[in-house]
Image (cartoon, rainbow, N blue to C red):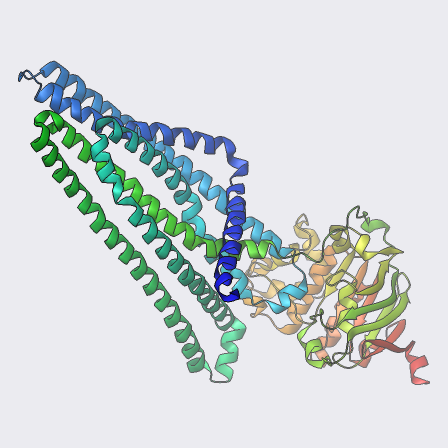
Amino acid sequence: MAGSRQPHHHRQLYNSRNRSLARRVIGLFGPYKLPVAGIGLLIVVNAVLGVVNPVLVKEVFDSALFPADGELNLMLLWLLAGLMAAIAAAGGVLNIVQTYMTSKVGQDVTGDLQEAVYAHLLGMSLNFLARTRTGEMQSRVSHDINGIEPVVTNTLADSIANAAALIAVVVAMVFISWEFTLVAMAILPVFFLLTRWVGRKRREVMTSAQNSMAQVTAATEETLSLSGILLAKLFGRQHDELHHFRRHNEELSRFAVRQQMIAQSFYTAASVFLTISPALVYLLAGYLIFMGGTGAATAGTIIAFTALQAQLYRPVERLLQVSVELQTSVALFERIFGYLDLEQEIVDAPGAVALERDKVRGEVVFDSVRVSSRSYHGSDGELRGLNQSRLWALDGVSFRIKPGQMAAFVGPSGAGKTSIAALVPRLYDVTHGSVSIDGLDVRRIRLADLSAAVGFVTQESFLLQTTIEDNLRYAKPTATHDEVVAAAEAAYIHDRITELPAGYATLVGERGFGLSIGERQRLSIARTLLHEPRILILDEATSALDTASERMLQAALMPLVRGRTTLVIAHRLSTILAADVIFVIEEGRVKEYGTHEDLLGH
């Protein structure tokens, strides 16, 4: 009994989900109500114009060419022919206008959706980004939305246009001959059954194909990046990477072939059915003529009806094709809306307060902070070092850093140092307890103001593939060239920049590959100087440098640290010595703290 009810239950869930999805898709057109209304009006006018000429054909044959009295009515023929030409020209012009408006609205809707997904991903927490492959996100922003672009640009408008055309044609057919109309319509149910089957199959294949596409995109993004290619070359894995790519690509090709074969099978069957129907009309016409003479089915009636019949099956065939495309696109819409439905964990709280950067004193207080290890995804090093059986990445961490102090955090990998640093600018949120700046819980501060107040220099400096000046100005788009140069001089990188052939206009390679680690770090420091934060976080900023580069980088850090509250995560003694207070972190807790001399005395 239960087994027999289960498919019906799934069908109910599927239909409910599709109705909800349809409402969301229709909602995308909300901002464009006026153009959509204009398109609807054009569609109705075009549908009416489309059936006028076949109706006029009946009059051409029965009243002008072969009237009942047998005399050619040349004047009426000229009038009807001119009217038919004018209607055809008007329909062509309206089609051009309709195509433009439809394409414009469709592109705007697609652009809005792409922007919405991109903006939503930008607002996602590092937890999500750490567990999601970049290629997967790129696939949804580009491939999935590009996949639905024909649907929102053409398919939806086509479905309305063909539905209107179908109604107009059926009305005209009934007007000409209800007997012929019954024959023409009798075969239509077969198409609807065929459409349901084809749509379901194509949707299944499309879902698998898009998942496979995401795998190919992710593999390409990872292995064709500079770091990925370098890794493959160093370990001689080019052949293996090619094998993996070929396997994913062949799978994608199989899905593409299956899609084409399903579609072609449908269109072939449709063509066969559509060819049979006119033949049935001719047989009925012959029978009517035999039974009632020529008056029962005139030549004009037969010719006009077969012309309308051709117009009937065009919108029917297109509607069936649209139905298949819409069912296929459901998989794409589900993937896109699936991303939009993801909750953004780090957002402005209701009534978030402003924090004026110029008035920030820089007091940082952790009060009984706990962060669950299950929800935390830290840096690679911290993940590798983290004991996965530990319940808390941070467990009851409390301390106070006074305005202008430099606080150093030391301890083994995975101890929780980076977790502490990431909580200050709200890259993550605490599970319990609070982190505050000048007495304000960071969760109550507007994110834009928090970003303006806190500067972060990481171990790996990320540089954009643009000019050096644009990389520096990223922190302050309104900065003048003189301000950029001043920041570079303070970071001891100006002389090196001027040695480059294009100076500040030099294009930086992927992730700054054309520069040394020390040069990239000094550019990162110069960028942070332009940002002018009141609180500075240095996360292993010198750990990857040799001694000479480290000394130069520490000199560059001096103007950045001066007068700012600074949190330093470091292993090297040279960095720790300058700290006002040192916190020793072990297994997510503050084991001890004090000055360097205090800790040596323990």
